[in-house]
Amino acid sequence: MYDKNNVFAKIIRGEIPSKKIVENEYAMSFYDVNPITDVHVLVVPKGEYENVLDFTKNASAIEQAAFWKCFVETLDKLGVMCDFNVLANAGKNAPLTEQSVFHFHLHITAGKKVCK
Ligand code: AMP
Image 1 (tube, rainbow, N blue to C red):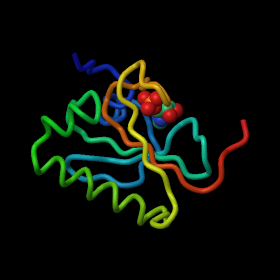
Image 2 (tube, rainbow, N blue to C red; image 1 turned 135 degrees about the horizontal axis):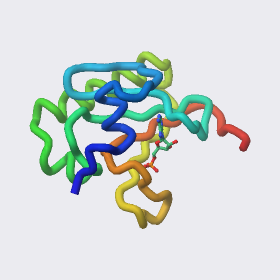
Image 3 (cartoon, protein in one colour; image 1 turned 90 degrees about the vertical axis):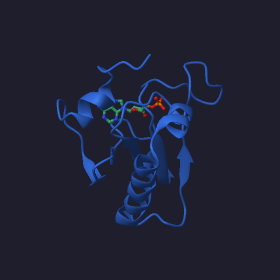
Image 4 (cartoon, rainbow, N blue to C red; image 1 turned 30 degrees about the vertical axis):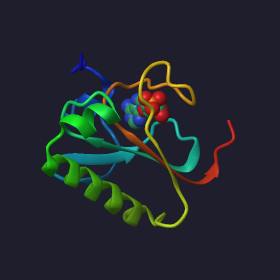
């Protein structure tokens, strides 16, 4: 069940701040608050989708096209079209890294790893 009070829903509604990169009617991208690389951003649809599977199965063609347009424009704007990673965690027990925010998002990482 989608939780309307998750942090990305609040960002989309403008209830909490974010460092926005690209926005269109159906999607937006913003910087991750806890970056693991020099460039670490998130791309989200504005619709209420819990994870990548929910989005792919249930979002309209217009929403999906707008999401990928936002994705490409984000890479372009950040100047990282060549060397980057994309990650979508799905589920609280996802084996590589767990999903912690249950609003579909893609991580885009580029540049060097941040030393923690
Ligand atoms: P995931 O584990 O795939 O669900 O990733 C959630 C990501 O959201 C993490 O990388 C967090 O650092 C990031 N995050 C959490 N709260 C915020 C926020 N307010 N603004 C930007 N990124 C956030």
